[in-house]
Each structure stands twice: as C-alpha cells, then as structure tokens.
Image (cartoon, rainbow, N blue to C red; front, side, top):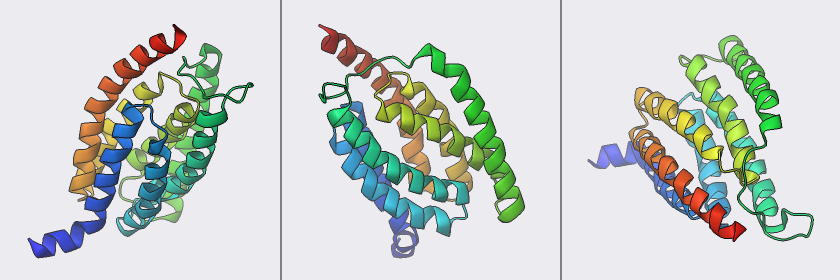
Length: 194
C-alpha cells in the first residue's frame, strides 16, 4: 500500500484539488480560480511524467486563463461589476468549432511528429476542446458544461489507460457533476435575471 501511495501521491493530491475545484465551479464561486491555479501547477509535473504532453502544455494555458477568468468574473461587465451567467452566443459556435478542429489537427500533428505519445488522437482532442471550455468558463457561459462533459468522458478513459487511476475516477465523477452543474447554473442564471 505504501508503494502504491508513493507512486501515486501527485495523482491523489491533484485529484483532491480537482474535487475542490469542481465543487467551487458548481457553486459558481471565485475560489475555483485559486484552487485551479495550484492544481494546474502540479498537473504540469504529473502529465509530463506520464507522457501526456498535450495535457502538460494545456496546463500552461489553464494557468493564464485562471488569471484571466478570475478578472472576468470579478470585473467582467462594462460597469466593472461581477459577470452574470449567460448563454454562449450563437454567432460564435461555427467559428469556435472551426478553431477546435484546427487546433485538434495541429496538436495531433505536433504529438505525432515530435513526441513519443501513444495516445495522440485522444490527447489532442481533449486539449483542443478544453481550450474552448476554459474560455467559455471564464466568460461564464452556461453551455460550457456541455464542453466539459465531452472532455471529461474522453479524459476519464484516457487516464485509466495511462494508469492515472485517481484522476481518471475524478473525471468520471466530473461527468456527473457537470450535468448537475448545468442545471444548477441554469437555476442561478434565472435567479440573477430576477
């Protein structure tokens, strides 16, 4: 048991932080950003060790989006007041789908060409989709939950395959929480509009 815990301590710690993160996201709490920052710093080390290079690189993007998102949430409107929960603008759907596909293809090519990744398709997919997910979260779009459901399903399977069992289980739990989060945020959005 001691050997298992020693081998998986970083996985366990980032999983605990991930639980705190999703709890704060579910509640639309600003604390999500602080917990996320620490989780991402540790995630860089974990993913690099496991050969998930796109996920590792993604953590650097998440770090910058953590700062951006926390500023948006606090001072996101023109009146410099807290950003309300709102719908993803329909005019952005097609451009963002095109961006996701282009980024997915680029990351896939980079992984196949320059790394020894044995999961380039899934690793590049979750990374490309996560770029939009964290951006949508920073802007407090209700539909960001749908993006995370797709990311979480694929990531859970990928992490089980890569022997990161605690994070894999966390992402499986994220699927359930994301579904509940969507309905919670929908309720909060209606309350904010009253």
